[in-house]
Length: 335
Image 1 (cartoon, one colour):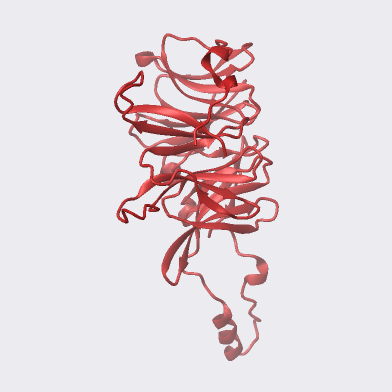
Image 2 (image 1 turned 90 degrees about the vertical axis):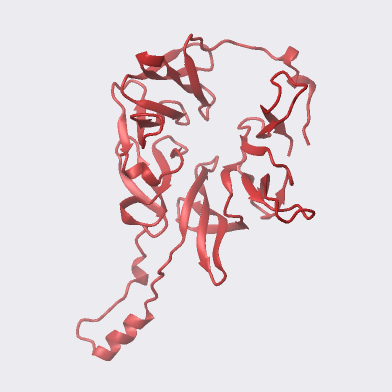
């Protein structure tokens, strides 16, 4: 249900100009502390820049200017001192992942073009802005979750078969043991030929956990689950089984709920129809419900980081609206 309140009327809003340019700018994102906005400015044939703008209207800083790179999806660290972004030779070329920092003259390359081939989404910042988290098929492993320190570039596997097995699960073979004993010991070691694979969703608001989508094998085939990885212990908790098409998995501002975009069939009158829907999961009770069943055009975007409202986009035939047919709109929904 869409709701409105008097405080959200256009005439009651206070508008403050923070940044002006004659050029095209895109991908504005706000840092978690609400102090900075990062955006990409396209100077057409003169080059591209990454700019950070103070939300207090006090400062605008150009962190990077380049004539040779195609830049997209610039995302600020929680306090805005670093910005991670995609960099490539052209819009359709393979991209590398780079970080540019305030006060630094050159960006650092986090993942090369080859390393980033299987990284589907831009890495997520840690709570303190000292690490990035991402998922990909790095160093020959199946899709796993990794952390990398910024600016030290120390990589650590967190989930998936890239994580070394614990010492107590390794085969302990005595050098002088009889052949029969060695064979018996080897038979006890169970090798998982198809270990789980992981996709990164979000970092919890307290920075202690990662929200992941896990693909695992079962007797009936592959199943998909929302799971939570506790960074301090490495423990993984199963939250819910979901459809494989689940995308855009995000924590609520206080971390008590998880919302995501999914494509399922809940339309009993048309069993062949699969619709985009918004799912909501309660972390404590693990109750899973669908908020927008049987809508073909609603796409979950994010939680409002300060209001807690759910943001989503629609595309429809708004003939009476200001933008006419096939108009894109952004809405918010009370939970």
